[in-house]
Length: 74
Image (cartoon, rainbow, N blue to C red; front, side, top):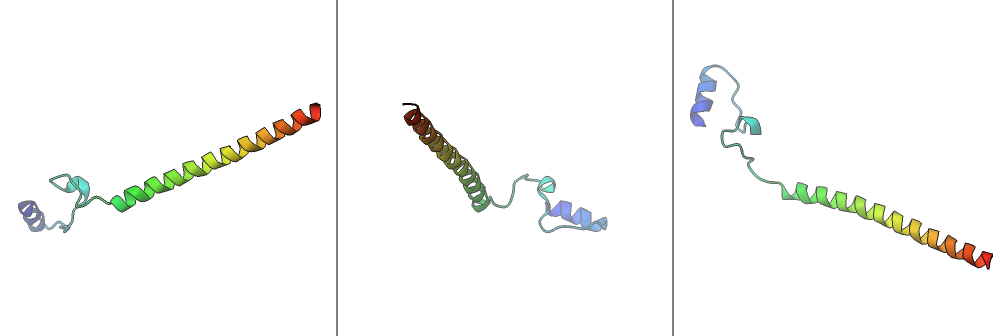
């Protein structure tokens, strides 16, 4: 990697200390951000839980209405 940086510097190109992922010879990131990963997972989980809670409330409301209608019909 040092030789690649030296060649680019000799040609007058801008040399980055941390080149982008597609330009790195080893093809790996410097580190994995588990914080970002689990934050995204938590947001998705919270969204799904909110949807599930809304469906639960709607279902209970429907059951209550059905019971009320059944009592009125008797």
